[in-house]
Image (cartoon, rainbow, N blue to C red; front, side, top):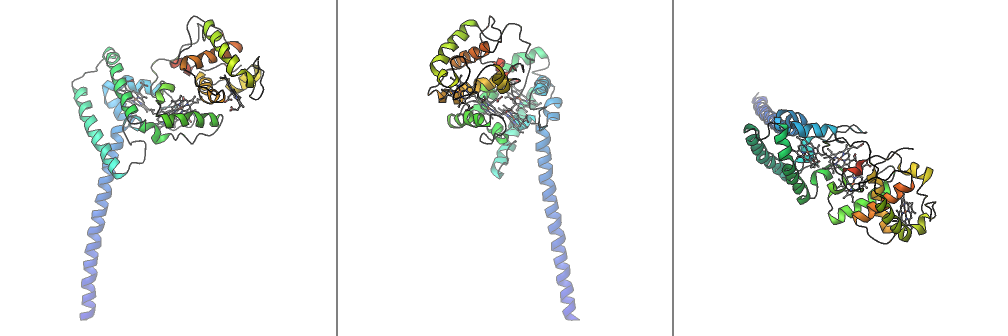
Length: 303
Ligand code: HEC
Ligand code: HEC
Ligand code: HEC
Ligand code: HEC
């Protein structure tokens, strides 16, 4: 009797401990989940793009960009690009830093929003350059932490993956700016207009030809017919670059081919070489030189 009573006493104590333990654990989980929910919600597109009226135009631009709709159907949210560690697996201390960042940013944004600093498109256009500089310098200072949270620069596969790995190796070593090459990656405010005025100038192509003769001809042939390297005209050209962005051609030349030629090119020189290749492949010259602006996102004709 006494014996079983003791057992019963122990049992009920164990029961209480279990009960309270479970309650504590579940409320802990609920609290973390709620915090996380709030954290996720406050970086979501709905929150950043719609809740804040001042972000209407940034949101429109994001909807035009490649991180909203793309081939793999994976979407990057506002926070994943704009808030440190939101795109990566944050450690506990990073998570705390993220919360502090959000608190700081959130308070400021709330202040601006309630004071209606940006209420019209005109006000947005006026503020945009400064906001852009602020964010770009943040990214530079933090070595593009949010981009790198999703993009591993060693993990490219598919066509031209070797070139991508190679060109990004420099990026890794030199801490180079992603936006220098990938313009309008977050937001596209103006759709690129169809080429009405040609792709490059005659002078650029002539400069490019000089460089080609000295540094590329040995491997790609006097008339671009190929040699050690592939032909760079006609059917091979279309096979390599038809439907690709100018950025792709430029990247090949500025990166691995400059290396093959045992040199480095300034942006100007590499664009001159691109111009020469475009000229040789029948794309028309115009009055404006090819520049490293959003023109590099222009798509080459497939045929
Ligand atoms: C893929 C990453 C990415 C995503 C997603 C993204 N942005 Fe950006 N955002 C950028 C980059 C890069 C810039 C700087 C240059 C530019 O404008 O493209 C920028 C710039 C901005 C600016 C400064 C003004 C400007 O446009 O230059 C604001 C404000 C902004 N983003 C808000 C948002 C909001 C709100 C969302 C969600 C609706 C969002 N961003 C989604 C990458 C991103
Ligand atoms: C949440 C994850 C995520 C973040 C953060 C992110 N990206 Fe992306 N990025 C993607 C996905 C997904 C794609 C689309 C892949 C596809 O097309 O299949 C993509 C596509 C790209 C492309 C190719 C699209 C094109 O049109 O050229 C570039 C370049 C790129 N990202 C650069 C960046 C840069 C720079 C940043 C930081 C400002 C960034 N990404 C932030 C996930 C992300
Ligand atoms: C030492 C020989 C060599 C030199 C010099 C050289 N290339 Fe190449 N090039 C190659 C080889 C080999 C390939 C094919 C393999 C590859 O993509 O790396 C190639 C590929 C290319 C491609 C196609 C790349 C792709 O991803 O499909 C282009 C465009 C190109 N070269 C342009 C140039 C230009 C312009 C120059 C001068 C600045 C140059 N190359 C100098 C050997 C060379
Ligand atoms: C020196 C120029 C340069 C810099 C700097 C650079 N990239 Fe790139 N990136 C390229 C080129 C060129 C390609 C190939 C484009 C193509 O093939 O259409 C590329 C391709 C990519 C792609 C794949 C696009 C696709 O659809 O294949 C992603 C993602 C990307 N870069 C992310 C980044 C990120 C993130 C950074 C910064 C950490 C960065 N890049 C910095 C030149 C650069």
